[in-house]
Length: 585
Ligand code: BGC
Image 1 (tube, rainbow, N blue to C red):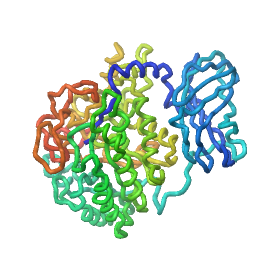
Image 2: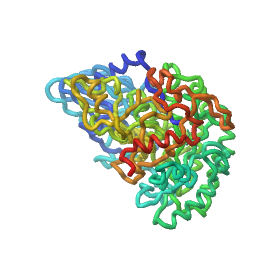
Image 3: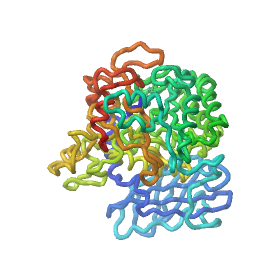
Image 4: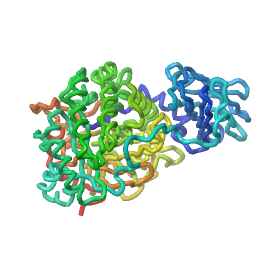
């Protein structure tokens, strides 16, 4: 499962990225020079504009987010504002930018002309200047000044209605979390496994039969798990039950290891034989006091951004799933059906930093998530948050270097390892992506989860401090705890360890570190193994494989002789235990 894939392509896109990078230091620099303009209450063109800059002395990037604060959609928009200095437009994106004297005009690009009530749209541009770079003081959309007739003053992003029921902001706070007895028994049967067998891990519903149970890795059915949870909950004031919903039509379109039982067009089966029965069980009043955290469809939507034509990383399966719309349709349905249950907390899978962290993937992914959550009459209120790094290996925090480091004046973004990514680890990515999701229209109180089950990178090879500054690559390679060949590698990674133990509220914006991929369950096999689950051999699980565009043609780094995805892999469990960080005593 969970892979990564989808880096941006190799040389073809490199030039373009390099260009973006000139203006670069920008895109995520919310906060730097940020300001939020007031809200207008008039229905006509009520708007607010968030203007932020990243300034390097002789030039800057301006990032602009327009929010439609009115009750009706905007069909076509033109933003105007004035500079007071000699700021000169160089190049803009996501809109048609022009300048005449002090006046800057930003017209929608066509594809982003429609902005639903409460939704936002973003664009950016690079400017040169000398002297002082004073921010504009007034913005107009379609000729109406933003923030004039309404309350004025800073506003929060839209938060139209409260979610149904009594959902709390962070379900993990002051809560026990369900220990899956199936996983726990496997862990406890391993030498040394007792030390972690009581950690909470998620229950995976990865095919229809998992709902009733009785299959590999899923011997217990959903109702029985929930009944167990009620018993475990007796020891706690609040209690979280974590369940992964993972059975989309044409699942795992960029890889083979976790292809599933449903074909690309089986959307009706997905709805009626998978989501409906799950919703019925989760909605049973007997479970109303549990906080049910659903992890919705790993690795799906980001594949439609990064692994489709014309990118070099495209796969036929992902092209098909983009064209037939069934990933979006299925997720829209799942979010609405499950979101209607007051004690369900939907967290949508958002890939990881080594996939979505590049500029040309980040905003496009957030837009696609928003479009999916709100299509078919859906609402952002059905999305409690997002999860990153599910079943992946990217560090939560790289302790010895950050994205802001330079070596002899050159940014680590230019190193071979970072390769122009905007992030070096999942926590900074989760926090940055959260901001982007809110900009795209998700509620301002969404929370993020990080799957830390296998991203510990301890053991003898772990660096103990920053690398040498003899060269950029020496510094980054000497500093990074991530021991993979490439941040796009995902199958049974050699050298990995258990990561941070599950815990609530570890950092701002992060609801919890959680163990979603149960450590010891394989990511996939490299050779054909007969099975009824739809799983295929995947070269990324073969240690001798030399890679593909999605991992920039690097060695796979996989452990040998792995079983099918989801099946118990004792050798991997042992390695995860040995390389745990923090170590397991
Ligand atoms: C597999 C699922 C399994 C899950 C948890 C995924 O890679 O495809 O079948 O339930 O991992 O181990």
